[in-house]
Each structure stands twice: as C-alpha cells, then as structure tokens.
Length: 604
Image (cartoon, rainbow, N blue to C red):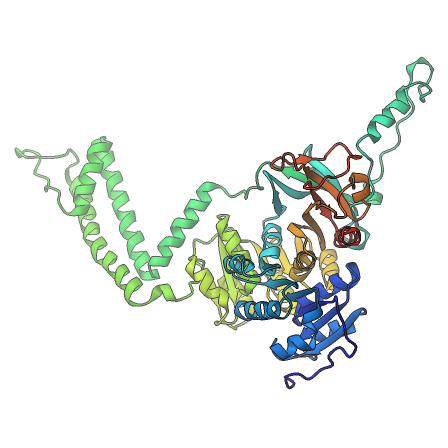
C-alpha cells in the first residue's frame, strides 16, 4: 500500500461533479454508468491505484481525476472537493466506515446527494433518516434475486403494486404480456440482442384490419383473401423476451413431501452424531416391526397401539399364560417377544436422549459448521460465502430450497450467518473436487459460484460439470467476453455480474431516481423505476409518445395523482400529458433511464 495521500488531486477547481469512493468492481461499473450514460464529471477516490479495479478506472475516458488515499479521511474528502460536489457514492469499505464518511461529507456539504452501500439493510433504512439527501443500497441484495432465480431456472420478479413483473421467453410468453423487452436473442451470440425494440402501437392491429377488409382494401373478387405473409424464420429473427405481470411471485416447484423429508432428516442430523443416529434408527425400526407383529396377531390396531406405547414407556402389564385368569392378548409367544423388544427399545431411548442433550449443550455442537448429511437431496450448492453468497443462500433457504454452502476461508462472514439458519457448510482449502463431493454434488440440482474471482468461479463450474454433467450452473463473472464464451460452450448455464446488476441502481439513486428493482435478460439489465412528475419539472406535460423511445424506455403503468393507489397498466391514452403528482412506472435500459433523467433535469 502506498502512503496516504499519494496521488494527483484535481489541479483545476472542479464543481458540480460526482465522487465515487472505492476501487472494487462495483465502483468500476458505477463510474462507467456515470461517465457513459449520464455524461457527468466524475472524481474517483481509490485506496490503491495499483490494485483491484483502480488501474482500469484510471483508463476510463471522461474521468476527471483519480485520487489515492488509503482511507476516506477528512483530508481525502477535501482533496476531491466534496464541498462543491453534487453527489457522493460510497461503494467500498465496511458499513461503519461508510456511515462515518457519509455523515462527515454531509457536514462539509449539506446539500450533497449521498448513496452508500450497506450490507445491513435494516441499519441502512435507519441511516437514511439521518441523511438529508441520501439513500442506502445493498449491491448483494440487488443482485441476489437474479442469481437465486437463475439457479432455480425461473424468472426473478420485481414487485410493483399488487403485481410481480418478470421476464418470459418465447413459448412462456402468455396473455399477461405488457411489452416486448428483447428480440433477436441468439444464445450463441448474445451481442445480437436488441433491448426494448421498436414495436407496433396499440392501434396498429386495427389499422391493419381496416386496410385488409375496409373500402379499397386488398380483398380479392369472390371473397378470396390475399395469401398470408410467410412466417419469419426463427433462426433468422432469434428468440423474444417479454415483460409480464403475475398476481403473485413465481413459485418454486418442490414437492411438499420432499421438503418435509429434507427438513426432518436435516434436523435429526443437526442434533445427533452418526453413532447416535444408528442407535435411534435401529431401535425405531425394531419398535415398528414389533408393533406390526402385534397388529397382525391381534387384528386390533387400537389395542396394539395402546400396548406398544405402554411397553415403550415400561408401564405395560406382563402377559399371562393362555389359561390363566388374567391372560391378555391372543398372540401367544410371538406377542410376548414383540412386547419384550418394544420394552427394551424404550429403555434405550432415555439414555440416547440424554446423550443428545449432552452432546448439543456440552460439546458446543451448535458452534461448528455442519457438513451435509446423507439425506441432502435436490439442493443448491453455493460456492463462496461472501456478501453475495450469503444473500443467495439465505434467499434460497427462505424459499424452502435445500442449500449447502461451500467456503475455503474459515473466517468468511457468511459461515456464521448460514450456521445460524441451520444450513450445512463445507469448509476447507482442499481440492475443489473433494469439497464438491462432500457437498453431495451428485444429488444436487444446481451450483451457484459467486466468489469474488472469475477464475475460481469458472473452476467451480467446470468441476461441477465434470462430476455431474446435467447440473444447472450459475456463475458470477465480471468480464463480458468471458461470459459470452461461457454461454456459447456450456448448456444449462447462466452467468451474472453482481456489479453489472447493481451499478445501474446505484447510479439512478445517485441522480435521485427510485429504482424498484432490476431484471436480467441474460447479461443485460432492465431497470424498473418509478418517476414522479413534480411541479415545474420536466415530466409535467409529457405523454407516452414523449417519454418512450426504442431501445430505451417503455411506460409500464401510470398512477394518477387523483387516485395514486391504483396502477393503470399499459395506460391507453398515449397523448395525455402528465400532471403534477402523477407517477409513471417505466421499464428502461441503463442508457434509456439516463436519457430520461437528463431530459427531466434539463427542464427543471
């Protein structure tokens, strides 16, 4: 690490600029968003100009200056001219450090817009109340839904009002379609994808019918219709993706019986060791067999259950010989054998229960990460338990999907979080092949590799495919070219970039716009944002024709000021101008939302 303060602060006085603090992947993507799409001056404060993504950031055209300080101190804030800046993004460092820096920056410039990355979302909500003009976002929370959904081969959804918006492809598109969001989809060449392509207006179909059947239309004598136009070749046009609305979030299709079985087996494994489980299972099997024998001999289920429970508790009366006055039962010798077996098994359960309590409470078993048990089936393996991996595993667990964590660093923060949820974790720095075998790869449904290194994630994906060729693979990859090769060479695979998914939301928040969520179209990002028409603002008087543009923005819903609780989906009146207080929900590309933001600001 170089000495604190080494670097080149802006030589010329600068104002109305935006400051990005951090040298990680999210900082890199955020700077690209601000420079290329919003076209604003950016000053970057990095901890080390020679490490992480700092060298790439320094090479980006349009960056006003890159300043190096080992920590974001008061001196560092003055060096990047925080007192004259319009916005500050804190996307590196711990939650505590970012909070301290945000409050310090607000002291230098009370009107500055501050966006800080916070892992603890609850704490972030409370911090927003302390900032006059700020927002707290979590990059991992923004990206986790897309990664979890990709692992389950289902679309991730963004809630808007009482509906859930998601992306559907080709044959999955139904009558709930709102608009086409992508076409020319070729999984072998994702560069052909067109986002939010130009499409026919709502009245285009009526105009076509009028031209075909109205006066002067091309109706042939005798009522013969013209030959229909040939259907386009799917190989030439590629696939299509559409934005759809669902009344509820897409469900995870896991049989309830499988969920119950996994929960019971995993709970049993959590409280017992292998030897205790063997004793319990053997004793339970013997009790069930003995009960079955009693039922067979006496043909009375209620009586057999009654006697079995008493024997199990050691309180049953012994059977008498058949001719004695107090004889019970009709099973003879075999009944007595069954009762003896149940009684001795009942005696076994008491010390075994005591041993379990001693093991759990006395040996600190709860404090150790658990390896997956033999009953773990149809689970998702999450490789890398950093911020992102922890979010993905937690979300999958909340959906009822069995999860196994895999982490090489025993000090990773995600191990404790997963342990608190009872999720088994494989920890160690041995060969990845052995770790995946311990994670029961053969019985898994998917693998999500979300460590901070592209090469490690790719290695995990390839090892998983070698061990189980049909397993679903989701890989976190920063490099777009790298991801393109992955799509072209691996079937049943998906790649996501956490910074690519999160950076547009951070950039929009820095500009004061509310992003409800992000939807992934392969490696592309679609933003779902809500904008409000303010008195004197640029949105007032604009209609759908003014707002929408091919490749950029689609108006999904409108909330009129007179009735803000109701979302008017696919608002039919395309010529009505927005009034103050009206809100619009848009689906936009990164550049489209930036252009709309520029239009709104220029009119303010």
